Image 1: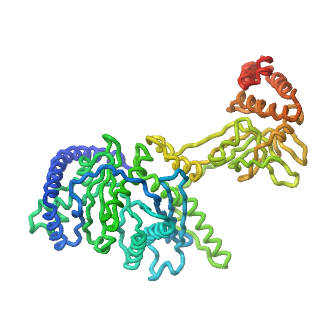
Image 2: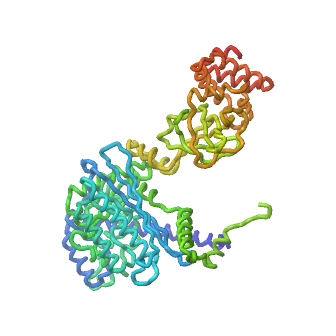
Image 3: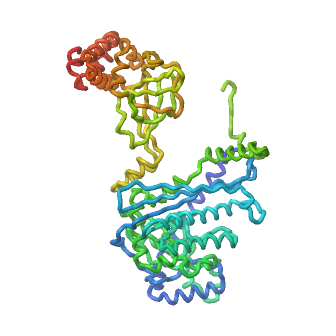
Length: 387
Length: 210
């Protein structure tokens, strides 16, 4: 059935009215956030103490924390060479489908290798991993979509480390999305992921996660702790005096084109697993154009954050890559890695056919679609007499 | 026999086909160039055709790249060598050869997907165009939505050079005379063709006959 547009129209109208009212109150909060940032920049130790106290009372607190650089730092584009090698890995997957004829999952990771100081064509590498065997279900439980996505993230880092080990440095390695695994992750998977990050650390690869959607409130949430009373800190997650203002609102006004913010540490429950050289940090970067700021968050591990030259090299590489895509800045190499990795529907169908043929050739039942999936697929197909 | 492979077949019909090739191979084929497609059958059939369109598609990424202040050479190479954006070359069939005999009729069957296409050498071009009595011109003149004048001018120019190298200097004049005969009841097209021949610096043919 189609959407009830008549019912929808007044709801959209109401949303528009609320949006205007919301914008008025947000404007005041944005100004307040900016004042708080300047206060915190003058007394960073106070902010650190507030964060520590709040995290003790509620370990689920997730926010930015001051690191070594001044909180209001805005560093212009560095006079840095491009890295000798730039790598980017992106993964795609065929998720498991219990309604399919054969239950399987597939990971496809695309790796792009560029040498920015040369005029040579980039190299493409593809790694494909089928997950359909019993060894892919170590606990006997079926593979879930989340587990497959975690394995994809692990494979991305594996592929990067394997390739980086064969190359002279400095190597910058990019992935799309945060470095922190956000999903429910079993301990074995998390350990494996952290091991891959350590491999990259041993190779001194300048590793970064590029995060594009900027509704994060990591810095804002930290600044909120300065407003709350001490006995309110345990409820910091619920009490949101600056709700609606995100980090993008704050840094769009602070960062000129090409500038990056200070490097912040990340306080979160999950981030506790990322210790020592893996401790998570991030900075904001304005990759936009004059009068059109566009921010990205760049997540880096401690081994990168603690090396100013590495951060500069990463900063320069990201600006160069984003400039390649003109009016829609995004690292070109990440876009190409995504292109190389993407699995099309027709390819997924082809893999299923190959699996069925293999099973048939060994005298086994090739399986069939569940009736539910069959009818879902059929209901989208229409035929007409004579066609 | 020429072994300049220019691409592989994407799709075909009895009157023509579309070839795909990589951007890096694009210097080889030209408008009006003659190609041959071996069918690998017992009769050693080869289909001949003329290139009438060379099509380079864009996609979202390319359109975005051109908005940048400059395009790095590695990005240009990446898009030409790595990315699957083939050049599409459209070919109009003009005849075929079986057991060594050239015929200017449409081929008995079209080539198949991924069949290899070769550019004709000057000798092969001279041999095809010398066979019969310009019967293949009707395939070009019958076709719709083609740049008929430019196609014929480009082809006649290339074929005349090949014929001249093979010792036949009268071929171009004979070709023009045949075109005039075929187009005697279509004055606008005839004038267009002769004008195009003149523009192709075959003025001794186009200008004289106009």
